[in-house]
Length: 211
Image (cartoon, rainbow, N blue to C red):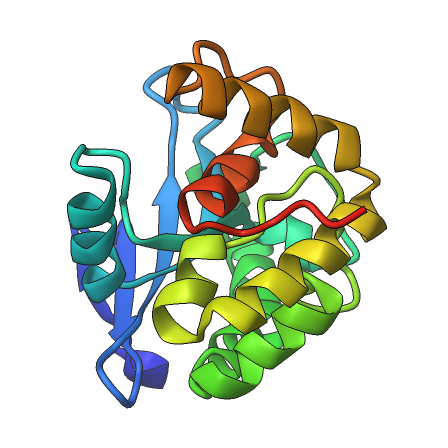
């Protein structure tokens, strides 16, 4: 397969292992069960995960909470295109759509995967700028991969990243709410915001709310 990826699940999933074998890069082509001859839905997802991180998470949380995923986003979120509808790859449309999707993967997804080949560098970037995958990726309402920063980095890096995250995303009040509930109950009864996951990981990694 081109660019070192191998295909599984009847070509719906392309996978590649990083050079140091610690991360896995995935391109998953999600489709709908409601397809018909005139419309075959396609939604590509770009993901990076770590089996080592997954094992660490399961031991740390003593549950099935951890999945080892560092990030997973729709391909379009990495591009200037912000369409909400899936790509229509019906037979009559394939010659037009498939080359566009392949080009988007080459231009926008592959460079993001390449950034994660240098774990130390990407950890530093996340610590300073958040999960800014490229110039088109909107970090608002996105979770910060705290467990990734702690496992592959250290407490200092994770704390710095968390401090910047709360300031940049204006989530100080939300963090305090989650920390208070976890301190009182030991768990979250309800995830009120997408970013509650970041707060949970920060709490259980003994990070502090500064500010």
